[in-house]
Image 1 (cartoon, rainbow, N blue to C red):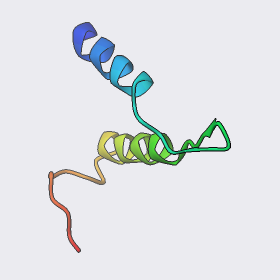
Image 2: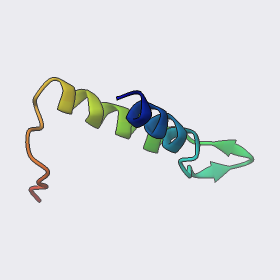
Image 3: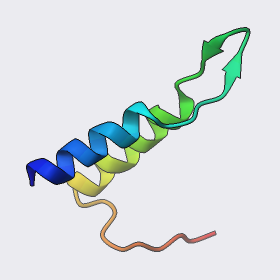
Image 4: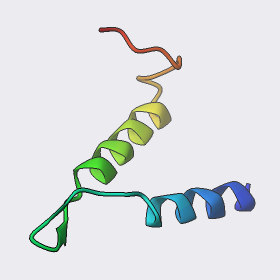
Length: 51
């Protein structure tokens, strides 16, 4: 479990984000955290996208 959390932390810190005027934009990180929250609260139960 700790190894998985460590890997997730490392991937979050190395996540490529859009940079404008030398400022990183947080949109991708916020979206990822929102999806993780939805998974935790069981709103997302399958790895399936409906478009």
